[in-house]
Image (cartoon, rainbow, N blue to C red):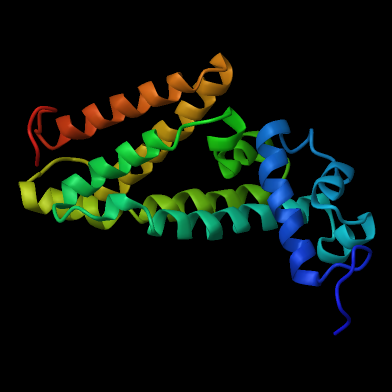
Length: 211
């Protein structure tokens, strides 16, 4: 294999740089507002290199959503909210962690796949489906702890661990939309506070007492 140069970057490296550029630019400018030229400039690759790795901008969108799922999965797997021994404490720690990482510029903490899904759900079904895999896949990682908490606290109600896991993502994605609309990250953090209160209510737990 020839050594990578500025004009002929190593294949995986160029592809990764394009995916990282897509992650950042789409969150800041939207999918329609991000051109292939923008992506190439940010990744420091040629347009020829772009089309070597992706047949179209839509193909890049699908790959970016999958890349987001892969990289954020590793991030969340290593997060500290898995530490508590009590499953309800882990669920609440997850919400607290999501609130804690709402920091910096809005484009830095909002969700790529949420941004993409809102914009292209009707016009680009392949990207939409990739976003769905990411969002629902992440929600599924919460189900075991929620169900264990239901069992431990004897909760017999007409909601399921799956539905509550999905609802957490509804609140988080909606919180990001409010933060964008108000140009204020505090709007998102406020929504996470209400999610914490809601979960405590479902599990008959007051904010003043530990599980």
